[in-house]
Image (tube, rainbow over all chains, first blue to last red; front, side, top):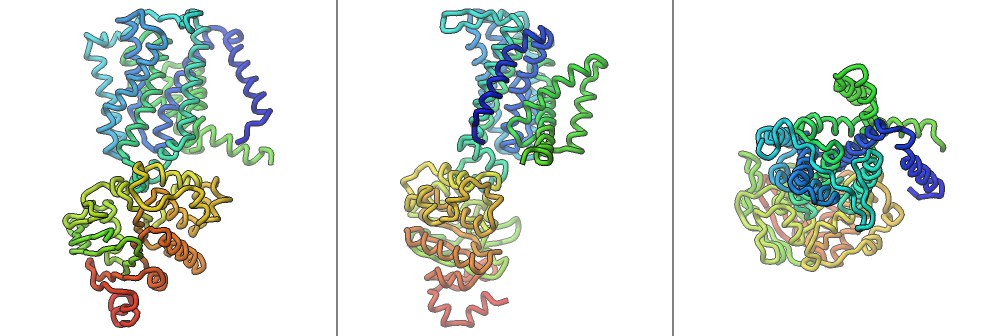
Length: 321
Length: 237
């Protein structure tokens, strides 16, 4: 795709709209948007495994959760740690967990892989619940101090203000999404697609398959961890149910499918749709998973390409020639 | 000798698929391995490449033992493998496919002649225009060429090629044949598994004929041509 003047103008308008968003929408919808941003980042990190490498990970919440706990615990015990340090520690915790579980995960495929990720997720969930001395069990880690964002020692921004947190997460998620998108465009992205399409062939070309997969997990874990860290800063609370629960893993998978599997933008669109739907559904019922499930069934039955696939179909049918 | 395979035994479960296979290839040579379907030709290539682990026997490549190593180590040692069904990455472009062949090989000095994208494009001119096209949109013959070119990008000194002419029209078969001859002139040895007898005798100087799971005949092309009864024993259906 060539970047034309038109794209540039659309991009600028979009940025302006995003910058103005909090002032038009108010606190509630600003926070809703932050929630969308966090899940877009989380969903995109899963998408690296699901769409690009063809790995169905049922336990992606473990990276999210570990990232959230790492950031929360750091700020709980070292309130003076910087904001970006806390964020980086959370992201690194996700990457580190990925490195630790990789030796097990890279040796299995398909169903065994999916079940192994599910089991690991549950293991960490239980660990967070039971290791009360560290994680405070079901109550979770909360009320830790949120350090201000210190820019080059010049300005100090209080990000506990919802609008400031909106801009902060917009920057972090934007950067994260860009880095992931860029990764898929590099030769390393070719390796991921190669592994998805034909892992054996990748092996014969001289790639150490377990090593390549470990690198992919680590990258994905890093971004999932950073999403978890953002979540911890956003809620000022992490608990097993909020961050480590298997439901988060499923939500991310559903986002990828609803948005459109096989595309980069899919999980971002999916996160927007699911966040919006949840916000609507929660007014009428607490059982929002009823709606998520229904949507997933409709997508899988009637439009496998998700909403991005629908858009492409519409464009092919009615779009400009 | 560049490659010396000695008393190779491979099993598929209880089936003894290769029985004491021994063969050798000198540097710069093209050797063809022929035989009827199901004799174990492809299995021989897969065993050399480490895709199927041989149970016993040795595979010496430039004096190093390869038997028991995983495929990526064998590729690193300088053996390129072009599988039977081509197996290009359909969702990657021609150029990305080629780069995949290069990226995996870390020790770029150990192996055979050096290949770059430019040199590949000289030998495979059709790729110049189509370099940005996804590989699933090119023809079968072009996919075969791409599969060969991708293996070359790893600078192998030996290519294992499994049935390159399978499913291609006669004109394309000749193109593939000529490409293999060109590559060989650049200094790459070739172990060729073929169904197409004409292609095999055109390219190879020496021929191995496989009977059920074993090598039943080894000699020069001239000898085989002079003895049609051997041909009918091993090749005719």
